Length: 139
Ligand code: HEC
Image (cartoon, rainbow, N blue to C red; front, top):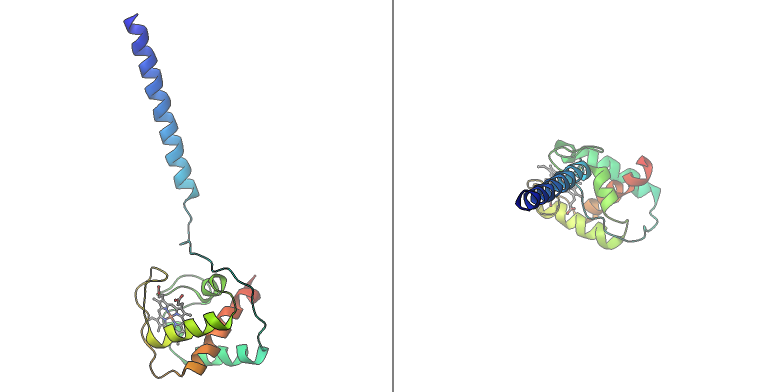
C-alpha cells in the first residue's frame, strides 16, 4: 500500500510542477515588449489643420526633441504613444499643456520632464494639439 501512495504523491507533485512551469511560461510570453499604458477613453474632437501645422513648427523650434521622438522611446514617451493615450479633447489639451509648462513626472514611468516656464499656455496647447494629431497620421 505504502509505495502506491508515494507514487500517487510524486505524480501529483509532478503535475503541480508542470502546471506551474506552464503558467510561468505563459506569463513570460504574454509580457508586453513595450511598456503598456492606460489609454484614456473618449471621442476625438475635430481640430483645424492650421493649428496642427503651427504646433509642428513650435515643437520643432523648442527643445522637445531632446527627449521625445515621434515613434519609439527616448528620454520621454514617444509623441505617437502620447497621441494614442489621450483623446483629442480640449480638457486634455489644457491639462497636457500645463504639464509641459510646469514639467513633472509620474505618469509614464520615465524620469522627469523639465519645466518650460517661458512657454505661453496658448503655444503649449498648440503643441499638444500637434502631438495628439500624430496618432491618425501614423496608423
Ligand atoms: C528633459 C527631457 C524632456 C524635454 C526637454 C521635454 N519633455 Fe516632454 N516628457 C519628458 C518625460 C520624462 C515625460 C514623462 C513624464 C511623466 O511620466 O509624467 C514627458 C511627458 C510629456 C507629455 C505627456 C505628459 C503626460 O502627463 O502624459 C507631453 C505632452 C510632453 N512631454 C510634451 C513635451 C513638449 C511639447 C516638449 C517641448 C516643449 C517636451 N515635452 C519637452 C521629458 C521631456
